[in-house]
Every structure is written in structure tokens, then in C-alpha cells.
Image (cartoon, rainbow, N blue to C red; front, side, top):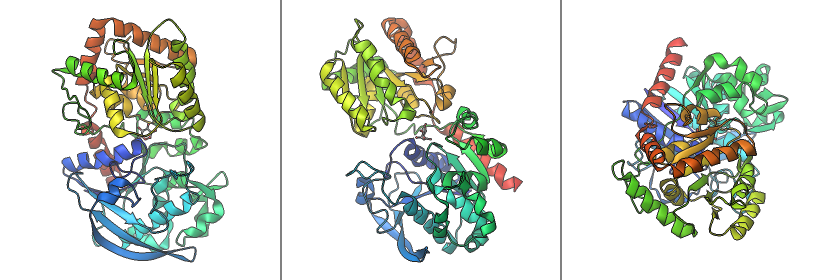
Length: 480
Ligand code: GLC
């Protein structure tokens, strides 16, 4: 099967969060099952994309509400990815350093909606001209949600309306909203069907994708159920479309995330020398952050936003930092400027026990996974979550709120087959109790070492989930 993934992110070319990791690795594993996957993203001015060499594939222009937009389709010349990556160069729209946020101002680009509409139209124009069309079009999140709509509704793409298409929901909080009058940006369609773009009086790209795609997938089974109860206004739509929905938990790229070969680590280790390896890595990060390596070390890595529960962290950390109990906390991530300020102050107040690096830093993230005892994820919402899986592969025990994909991938140690620490409600006492249990476990050396053994043996690679995607593709192909 030829599958084309269309996305705003793809690691290592452009990554903001887990969407990039998934689109950067799932295609490789699908290819290993003898399929043929390509990925197409916008050509941003990211360092990785700027370093590549390209083959020019196609160029032309489109008209968006009477304004002409020129573009080039470029193929990245790089055989290390495990799939072919295409980058759409749209001068004036994507030749900027940020994916969504302007790094100079810290705010989203003003023309976010228009630029992603141009990207989506251009991908379809290219496919229309191409002799070799995919068997499946796979869209990801709201940035590509108008593609299923255009395929089914725009006269211009009628000849492609029989290509089965899927939309995967990685995050339903963001939906690609605009005023309904922005429909004029799209190629002509019957106004009778404008309702397909509309959700609560607004043009909603994700809603349009959910209504028009042949199938919906969510990045874990629990998330699929949760979306029907809470999804930032789309609950009823998720309920209505439940029949065509599939919950498929993400995997991780086990080649990149392997402590034995990880080139971003100074001290590699495998399952066999895990004790020594973890100790060396812990010493390294503790030295770097001025922490005592004898103490239990709990880290948070991720975007500092509400969804991830980042606003709970200051109180949760202070709970310990002001108590008799000694614990190290490490934090890596960027986000809410108010939280940046709080964490910067906390760093001064609790030197030697707390360190925050307020940036996106892939290498440091790898070192923290390897050198921590625990990884903390107190998420309010977690569609899948990859950090817990990265951590476990590195022998680091997850402390998570049991929600979405965290619920599906982490089993509490109180259960016989358990290997992580979970808590149910999003509140300070429950999260604090989970940390308490983690610290107790840390001092029970036998138990701690058996948990490390257990988590390192778990297989979170894409192998089984990639097969589930194939069954979904086959199902929609045969049913329609
Ligand atoms: C989003 C979600 C995260 C998920 C990732 C990849 O970033 O917030 O939970 O793991 O997408 O699907």
C-alpha cells in the first residue's frame, strides 16, 4: 500500500511535540511491514531543513481568494529517515523559523489559519498533477483537517474523492478555528454543504476533518473514550462519529530511543549493565545541575501548559522543597511565561534541590531520561504521551496521572503486573501521595531494581501499533 502522511510536524525536520515524533517514526515502521509511506510537511526555516539537499519535484501556483501563491515541492535527499520526506516551499508563508510560534515574539503567527490552508490546498494540487497517487491519505490534527473536506466536496478534486483518507487526532484542544467567511480561501464547493465546515458557528478545521474523513483514529483507546466526554466543544461530534473511530496507542522509535546506542548520551548502557549505566548518567546530570546524586531524582520534561498539568508543579515541588524530606527535582521545557518566572525564582530559593532549564533541548532531554529515577507526568489531558515510554526504555519509572494514553501504558505497582506509579484525580494531595510512594520505593532497593528491570523489558516500539494502522487502512479500503 502507498500511504501519504500529511502533517505540520515530522521529527527531525520540524518538531514541537509528540506529533513530530509520531509522524517521524510511524512511516518507517509501516515501511518495514512492506508498505510504502511518504511524508509531506511545510518547508520551514528550521536548522535541520536548512541543512538538507533537495530534489525539485514540482512547482506551480494556486489562487487563494484571488491571490496567487507560488510553491515548490521539494524532496529531501536523505536515506536515513526510513521514508521519503517532501517539503512544500511556500515563500511568504512558511519561510520562517517557527512551526506555530514566532520565536521572536513568543506568539502564534498571525496568519496561522491561512498558511495551513495554503499548505493543504498545495498538497492536493500536487497530488492532482501526480501520476502516482497514494492508496491512503493520512492526515494528522487540525492543520490537515480540511483535506478530507476538500477531497469530498471540492469539484476541483473530484477525481481524487475515492482515495480513502484518515485523520489521526493527537490533540483535540486545538481545532484550527476561523470565521466561517474564511471558506472563500478554499476551492469551489457546493454551498449546500458549508455545514461540514461549521461547528458552533465557526469554521472548525478539525471538526470538518472528523466529519469528512473515512476513518478517525486517536492516539490511544482511552483518549477516544475521553473525547466523547470532554474535547473542547467537540464531544457530540466524537460521539456521532464513534463508529468510524479507532483507538491505536502510539509507539516509540526504538532505534532512536535506545540507551545502548543513543548518540546524545555520554554514557551508553544496555539492559545488562543498567545499574552502572544509570548511576553514571545520574551522576552526570546531578553534577550539571548541582544536585546530590544520592537523593531520589524526579524529572518533568515537556511543554509548560495546562494540559500537561504544569501549573500543578510549583506547589507540588514546594511541598517537598519546604519539608524535611530530601528530593531532587529537575524540570526541562518551555511554555507559560508566568510559570517561567515562578520556576526561575524557585531555582534561586531551592538551589541544590531544584533545577529548571526553560528551553526545548532534545539532547538534554535524553540525558535526563537516562539519569533520572522517575519521570513525572501529572497531565490533565494526555492523548497518548510518549515521555513515559521513552523513560521506561531508559529504566526510569513513570509517575503519571491515569488519563488517556498514560492510563493505557502505565500500570500501578499496587497491581501484581504493575510497574509504575499512578494517581487518579488531578489535584495536589493525590499527586503528592504518588511522589511519596515513589520516594518510598526508591529507598527499597530491591523493589526499585526489580521495577527498573521490568520497565526496560517492556516493548513500546511501533511494531504492534503499526500493524493496527494497516488493519484500519485495509478495513476502510474494503468497506467503501
Ligand atoms: C500530542 C499529545 C500527546 C501524544 C502526541 C503524539 O502531543 O499531547 O499525548 O503522545 O501528540 O500522538
